[in-house]
Image (cartoon, rainbow, N blue to C red; front, side, top):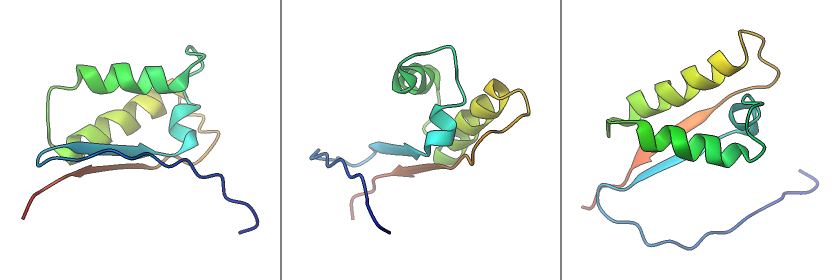
Length: 85
């Protein structure tokens, strides 16, 4: 890899916190929003489950629907829940 664009966030996580990561293909699927992250934020706020697989499926399904079956880029979603030991 020649050049990596890296953004570092420092956030304390607690038991039960959920982390959602997705590729730009998911973000760019929605052409209605200028700020694509706001679309994802709004969608995540509407989800009424803490099941990580269901959250990932909902986000990916919405991104596919936005593309009307014509995927322009790869789409990957990773959702993880923090568990204290």
